[in-house]
Image 1 (cartoon, one colour):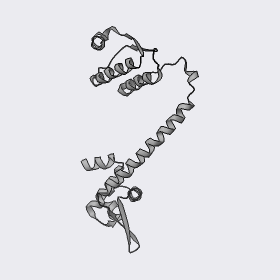
Image 2: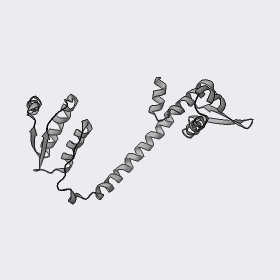
Image 3: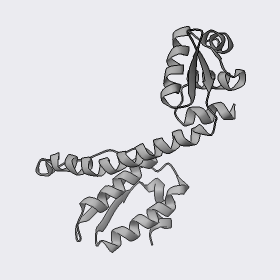
Image 4: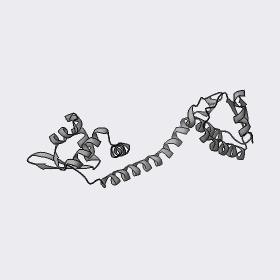
Length: 189
């Protein structure tokens, strides 16, 4: 099961995993033998073989006018991952340009009175990082906190955020629910 999960994590579908593992086990064989071994729809097996072929994980030869499929050496997975890594790096480089273009589309003047609601750990971090990116020295960060779900792993983040906020000269004012006295005392400094 570990190998199946790994293969899915690197981008293979469940059917591709079944077909690839079947080919590794059986060796060079016909499509009909693969279909019998994996027990999935014929068209899905053909689709999986074509996608695995494009990924470089299988190959075929023609024997008596029929395709005979073969799994490539599992070492090929590293080449497949390396290609994915290069694609990701290219996308990250592109994202820098696109993000700047998207920022230019934002009409900042129409956003005078605006509020946003964030939820969860990522939402908390996003809202705090926005404070550091938007507010300037001397401006005030206002916070209303009615409840807190007690994510202890955020304590280090909150401490780091407050240090960076203070360093940028951004003021801080907050209103807290009485139920949060313990947390407030802990963070007062």
